[in-house]
Amino acid sequence: MKNLETLIPFDTALEKVLLEITTFGTEKRALNDSSGYVLAQEVQADRDFPPFDRSTRDGIAIFCQENESVQGKRYAIEGIAPAGTEQMELNNSSGCIEIMTGAILPKGCNAVVMYEHIKQEGSTFQILEEVKVGQNIHEQGSDVREGISVLEPNIRIGAAEIGVMATVGLSEVSVKTLPKVAVITTGNELVEVHETPLPHQIRTSNSHTIINLLSQEGISAEAFHILYEPLAIKENIQKHLQDFDVLILSGGVSKGKYDFLPQVFAELDVEKLFHKVLQRPGKPFWFGKQSSSKTLVFAFPGNPVSTYVNYHLYFKPWLAASLGQKTNAFSVALEKALENNTPLDLFIGVKLNYQDGQIKALPITTTGSGDLAMLTKVDGFMRLRPQSEPYGKDELVPFLPAKPLST
Image (cartoon, rainbow, N blue to C red; front, side):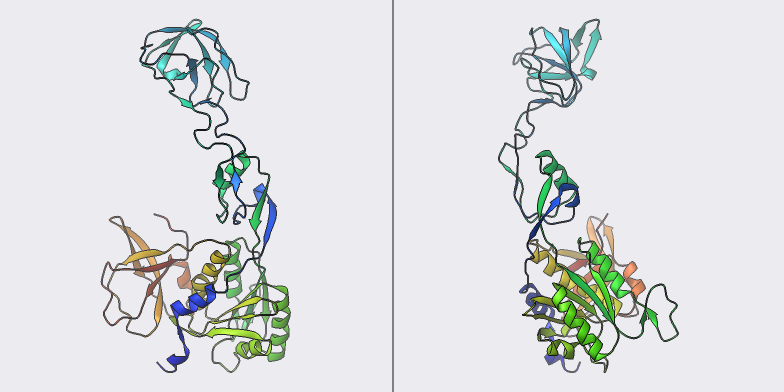
């Protein structure tokens, strides 16, 4: 391959991207509007969890001595304790109080016997099974003590976290602010989705793909399209650099006569951190920043698969790192032998199969980086580094998920 000396390795490119992580402050959100955001505060228990000794079964609460058999014994009913009522008190050790799941354990009781292990006869219950002190009781503070941290910063908020914060009375949550992102496409051949393209035109798709990917991160991005005309491109990019934290562009960064973006970036004092990476797809990726606005520019090549892969390779790890989160590493086993005798890192779309407790990857046949339909079939992309020897069947290789993994 020619001119490879101007390209940088994938690992170097990713390292340069991750050197540009930044923060965008914090904001307050209502509890039910915080899902998907990254927590920016510590959450502590405002009281013991559970806040009292509670019954874990429907049945009767009694008092019994250690190592004393109560099987066959009858207990007189003194009352009933539903969940949500004040604590009752057992008057007599030969009595019992009916109790519902979640109710506070009555004073003087130290065991709960569920209805399946008792038999009612008039105003008494007979114990049918042996009873142990403390059985079916969720003890106060056994989960978490008051003042103990229950949630740490930098976790992504989901349903479980919402439930915990509701339990401690947190109606408003401090979360990390997400970047303002503009998604920009270029090209005279693109028309809107609702339009009927002429024979020389195609409908725009990359912007919709990226907008949807960003929405999965909680980012409501704005989409823009710029025609291939240097002045229009420069004027629009200049405005977007002032209005947004991040620009994600698709197209206009390769070697074509209408690939004006690198020139425009230079004229607008956007520092080029690198241009072109030893990888396939997505080799012409351009990355830079404008120091005055502190705006980052991810300029991906326009082919759909290249844009899609580079979004997952670079933008997602950058966003995670900027929000204080880690990117999980995955490996999969090759379902068949493969080789990469090129100088490039290859990112190959694969379908995952689960065999004998192992995740195996089968490459999806594709016509190239313009094969948008292929993306609907892949679970993600495996990475084949350059090496002289073929990769063997069942060999483990790095894997980049593009969809939620399921068995």
